[in-house]
Length: 276
Image 1: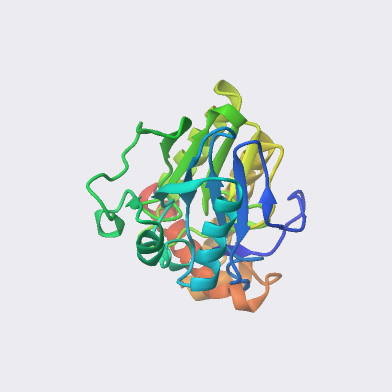
Image 2: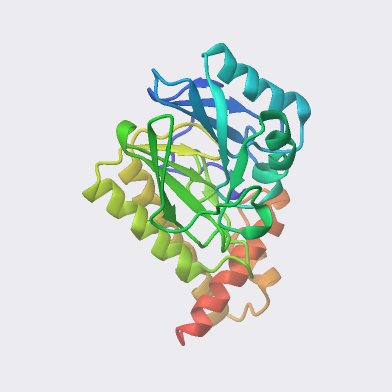
């Protein structure tokens, strides 16, 4: 989910279903909106020569979409053996239980309430299904349960809502926390520097081919917004609503409710650090 439309410096592009890397294929859910951009990206990940696949974020409870995901895998000669969730927002996870029923696959997530099966996900876990390796990267901030999945073989990272293909993401206060989010962005930056990650496979929007540039953009954007919020408070804007109207005046008003969640997280961060 986003808190702003496309911004200067962010790549723009059309989202299409189909292969994004050698091992990752996108099936776009039919749920476009101001919050979900073109819709939710459901990712099918598998080794090219394997008959097993992993699905990341089956998306909304839309039977047609869920069946298209299964059909896409089957046309490639693959059976879906496992479902993973980047986080629990409905546009990513609402269809998970039905998808598990259709595929007879377990659902693994950080949040125990979202799991179907005996195993969850924790930091440092390595998923190996059909030979495809996915490393679990904890990235709280957008939500407390947000995860990313590092796909080393394709030098890629699946980011859910932590980094989007267009625009920026919200910090969903009070569950999401800005300090956690900044730490998560730095963690992703280290993947681009130390582990050679080049490609972002986001939960919404187009694929980004410059992962390090995307992370740096997000960090700079967050620093800029935080400075704007701090200045707004110093100028006498006290409530989150007042700050949103001042700082996000150039943003579509349909996105202001999401922006207000981020502003609440920013105000909390500033108070915790004694800056307001």
